[in-house]
Image 1: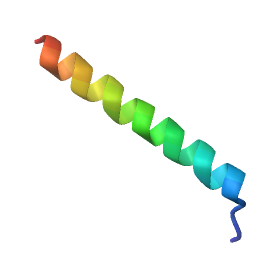
Image 2 (image 1 turned 135 degrees about the vertical axis):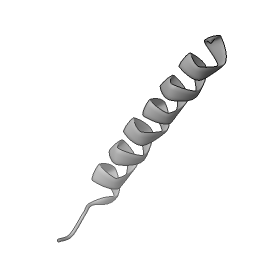
Image 3 (image 1 turned 60 degrees about the vertical axis):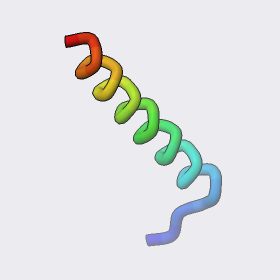
Length: 29
């Protein structure tokens, strides 16, 4: 399965935003 640079970048951004959302919600507790 071949991934383009754009697809890899979008996946990285989505994953990073997901991690940020989880960490920020954990800090609010």
